[in-house]
Length: 112
Image (cartoon, rainbow, N blue to C red; front, side, top):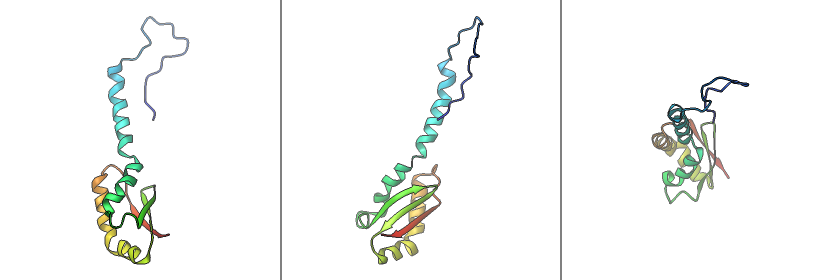
């Protein structure tokens, strides 16, 4: 995280204090922190069992969330076909609705 703060020149010999006014720095810092918190991929990973439901959460586990793609390991081919053909649009919409500030482009199901 990089905060844009005016720097005091090297070898400054002026009469003004070199400290920064917190009320000028704080709003920018809080906005940047809040933007980073909204894009936390671990929240997407943690929400998966709730979205898929308790019945399938042990058979369809999240491997990773990388560059807008959620990778899910599926234990059997029947569940793979069901998720890929019928449930994928519903799950994508639910994830996008739950995490509107996080870019979720696709869910990739893999046998494993």
